[in-house]
Amino acid sequence: MKLRSSPLSPFGRKVKIGAILCDIHLDVLPADTTDPTDSLREQNPLGKIPVLLREDGPAIYDSRVIIEYLDMAAGGGVLIPAGGEDRITALTMLALGDGIADAALLQMYESRFREPEIHSARWLDHQAGKVARGLAALEAAPPQPLPVSGAAHIGEIAVACALGYLDLRFAGAWRAGHPALVAWLDAFSERVPAFEATTPQV
Image 1 (cartoon, rainbow, N blue to C red):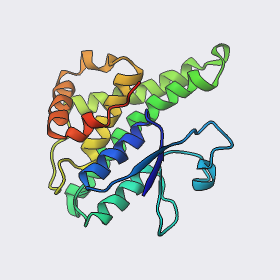
Image 2: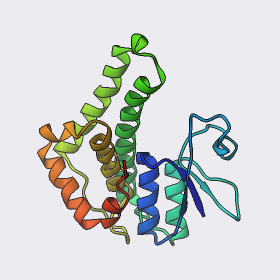
Image 3: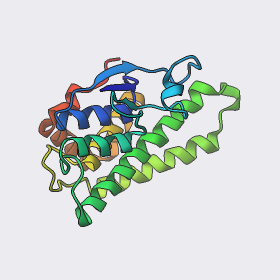
Image 4: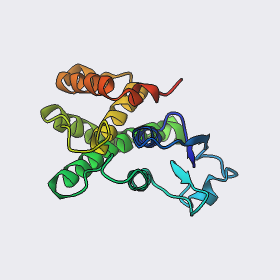
């Protein structure tokens, strides 16, 4: 299978880690979401990454659906608890991690796609507030292990990828006020070597 993604995408990184933990090989192919001639827009009409290309079925997107597919292909219960409250906890943590990453991405897009004179401070503050509140919630209650057969559940992976993106794009400024979360990420990185292995090369 092939994964269309970008080296810096936290959502693509999440899928790469998930594939490693599911022992599924993915050929990673670059994609440019800003290029109207990129075949990405034929594979996903939204023109967003990541996209999973299969030989025996239609393309799958977005990252949450790809993770569901990888977990299912690996027999289930590898990344996502099989059911009950544990499954809801993991998926809620997934939503929080993805939400932080998305808000951080939107801040970057404001500077990449809009001229400086029309940047919206209100919009940037709105997105920064989401990140700040998400980090505060995680500092108070860092992700906890849940029963899966892989090294980590998808909620943990999503949070780690979001923090990695903040390190990459915002110079790790989040670390100063979140010591418990820093300690959690260090422990996660040691427990899940796939996190370090998928660190973007910039």
